[in-house]
Length: 211
Image (cartoon, rainbow, N blue to C red):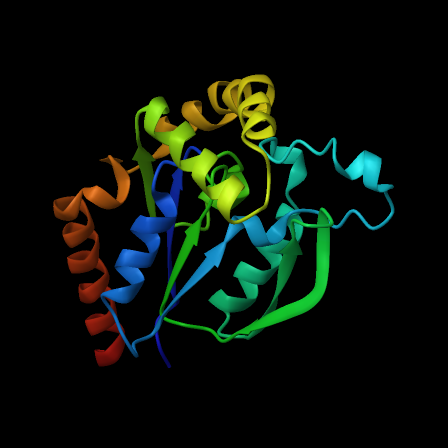
């Protein structure tokens, strides 16, 4: 039987490049035993709320996430059991009816802005990474993402950043940097740091293959 899977947490502020880091690491292992779990998939269902109430959701606050479900799913993956990962629909601000089947793997990359905020999640991680990127780059990346991928206006993105995202980053995200084993400046542009992560993961996969 294989050893227990390892969980690598990749955290960082909105637009920091944490998703790029996670995907670059994942792409370094084609057809191998590795998967990505996104914290964003675990926003709480809001079916019981009106659309007006849903629009007020603070997606950058720890209480926006269903960490109980995320932890339960990670525990199942650690026991080499499959899960059904939820899908969040940002157009209606609640969880979709769709699910994504995820089979257990030897390496699980968990990425999200607040994965290091919850001690229960931290305790499940073998390696904790924080992607540290200047705030001006992060707001530009978020602006491009939300206008191009989520159909939002420039004004609404900027207003949300000033009133919600920035205060939440300073209160909840930035302080979690102290829990990181590795801090990666500039996200996906830091080729050296990504190569070091890939080397570490490769050694874990090699060990699992020999177990």
